[in-house]
Structures are given as C-alpha cells and as structure tokens.
Image (cartoon, rainbow, N blue to C red; front, top):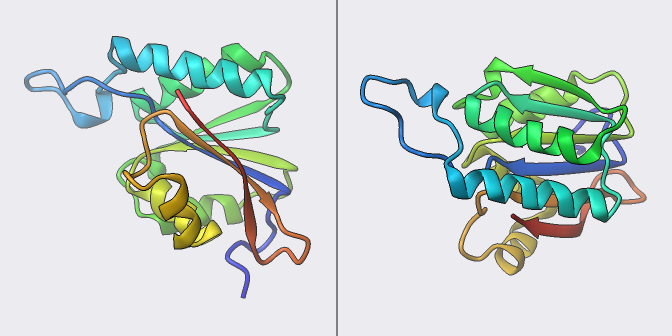
Length: 165
C-alpha cells in the first residue's frame, strides 16, 4: 500500500532552523529564528543549492520560524520554485503533512518545511526506522534536510542525502 496517492519523484523534508523562545505574552506560532538559527538556515539552504537541490514546490508551515527557514531556501535557490505557506502544518501530526502532499496535483519535487515531531515521523514512514536510526540516532536536528527519492516501484523511498545546517 502506498503512503502517497500521487507521489513526486523527490521529497525534501526540512525541519525549521533553531528558534528563540517566545516573548513574554507572545505566541509560539510567532517565534523567530535566533542568530544561530539564521546561520543554520542559510547554511543548509546554500549547501542544498550547491548540490543542485531545487524543489519545484515548497510547502511550509506558516509559523514564523518555518517561514524564515523557507525564505533562506528561496534566497539560495533563486529560481522558479513556488512557495506555499500552510497554516494547518503548524502543530500538526505527520498525517497532516501526508495529506498536504496528497492534495498536490503534480510536482516533480516537493520540499516540506515543518516542525518536529511531524517531520521526523514522516521521514520514518517514508524510509523506515532502520534508516532513521542510522541517519539521525539523536533525533531530527534543526535545519536538517532529508532528500528522498521515490523507488522504482513507487511504494518505497530511498534516502539520497541528509544535510544539516
């Protein structure tokens, strides 16, 4: 049974970069990247661009820290990539991320910029726990970018690369 109804050829899973704490009286949704997070986001985005990773579509949580991470990607790839900011990806389970991917008409490659634990759970569903345990034994890092390619049979995903900002 396939996890995604019409999967793209490549999926990029990017956890937002390191963020600061919410300001007193502020909302978690509005938390911004801290100084280290800005550097992480720029570093992972630039390394991805250097390796030729250019998604045709980016789906990002609309939370500020995800937006800022996606904007770093946008600056680095400077191309024809479409960016969509989706409120429902904030504080959502992995199933919501899967549903967002399933609703796509057709895109050769899609990047999802989101939050843990959903990004790590989606990664595990796509590649399996053996790959997760070998690749990120300490958990999905901030500004971690998994590059997944669809297998020939379309039912499995193969980890092509994993970058950390």
